[in-house]
Length: 74
Image (tube, rainbow, N blue to C red; front, side):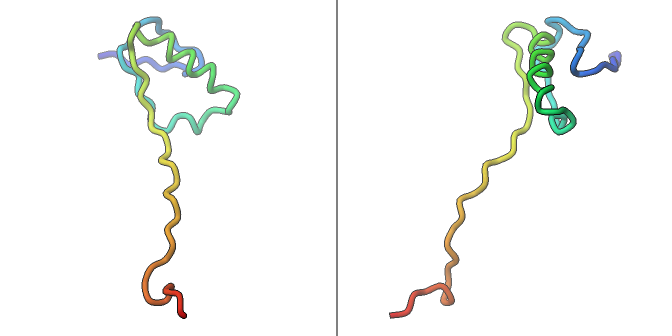
């Protein structure tokens, strides 16, 4: 195994990987840099390769409180 240190906005790889994984890196880039980052990853992937990265879960729908204090009175 060898280590390569490189700027993610200028990766020194072409068709080199079947899988690229990123954990939490997106927060370190300006929004305008993301298209270039994705283009670099795309170029580093072999045909059919995958890019895996976490995305935040959508917020859960709010549920009304339950229990005796929330019951309506007649």
